[in-house]
Length: 486
Image (tube, rainbow, N blue to C red):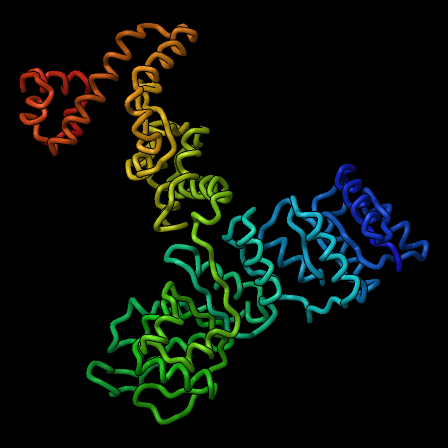
């Protein structure tokens, strides 16, 4: 067996792979740059498998692999990268990669991939069409998203029907658009239809078009989405909500490849690739009789399940930075940056609205935060005060506040937390510590009392054992008047 060639500019990575392959009885040779590889190739040598990093000084791994595959198309090549994104993944498969390994990877997984590559021939068809625009999907370090990217790399050159499932807000349309951009139909149109957003009596005409006079108000003939998407991709979002009668028409189109306009008599060819999406459990809908089983099987050729954002928390920081940058550019304002504690709070939030909710939060921060450096107190209240949120400190309050996640014991031990906070302030030589903490204490007590009394000042004052006028004066002094209803 010829040796496996490992190309990486990091000596430690070369050492680890060389040691692991040798222990597994696989001959190996390591290189630190593409220059060394070309020298070996020019000398007439070749490997059984090429394993190369992407980012290296000089020529990058994708270009190296492309040149190598032009000489030895039958020899499998595997890409290694610590910067996993859709562009690099698709580029790797475009150039004929057998597979890729996202750093850091399990060495046993790497060995298994290398063994599989050595025993099979890489065959991924014709190169993919180049993307017509910059991909809006952000890089991901999530294993679940890496699986999605890998599948998309293999799917992009295929015309098979794809079903994308996942909760609302997980980015199903972004995935559909990326599949189109990296397909052989990229030069054609991408048409998206939200089947749940169009009234039932109009959806048929929206999809298939109509002839003049087909129904009341049809004063002229109109193309439908199938006809507009000719030669491209038709994305049917929320397919699980499609009415039963239209499910039958859609099934006929998928089976026969043709359709009729509403009120029409001429058959039209449906030269479109279908990508469908739903947040509904279609198997359950089939069992309930709400979705046709034969249509489900027609759509469920290849399924991509998008993970909820809470299942890929390692991506939240990168996504937040991306959305903050986009928001700042859209609004023409300075870029906001999250401090460590604020980022921790974002990373621990559960995001019932998934990526769309994170994007909205970043827009809120860009508009509402008073400065470029965003602290916990600058986050939206629903994030900052969510049940189970990580412990954090309020401006001017230090460690006095304990979140519900700390438990009742911690809440009862607020005096100990206060002492710790005071000690930290004194060590930092903060001025007027007493006044700062007294103001923070009064603010915290009054806000809590008003919350319990549903913002009724008279009730709050009575519960605190002070007069209403005193409470009103304190609210004015603490700047709470704007936040409290009279």
